[in-house]
Length: 213
Image 1: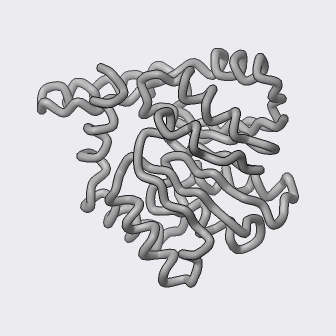
Image 2: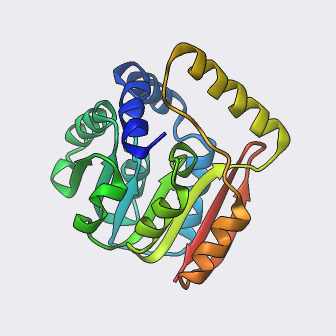
């Protein structure tokens, strides 16, 4: 499957119903665990008045939260127009819309037009992209200070669950696929690009990696 087909499938999977469910869960329970880990790691860097480039930003939880104490501007990139719509609506409610640029599409295709930012985030994004290496290269190049992402843990039970989900999608005729990429390979690539690992945090099924220049 090529990345264009995958982006079309992403638009369908992450549609209005999914965006509405995510917003309801966020309103009731706050950020997901992996997002909480990312927020904590970013705040430990003590960056202030920064710009955030959030890849696959979903309903905008990261920039909604970081506007409280870390960032003054955000670029929100997502392949789902429904998620961008919900993020924009929430920014309007909180008076932050003028401080956010909303960009719809495949970040690899858009990369040449995106600015560098002090913080670049990919929360549960790399696992949803077929060409992970190209994705990491073009997004890490945009990070001036911090590059942080969450990926599924490379464990047999995680691979089994994702494999079953992919099988179900294939049976349904759904082109979207999820992937368990090697953290060692990700670390190797980022090391070659001049990044140093700051921290690794984990849940049972996910890992959060924070890198700096």
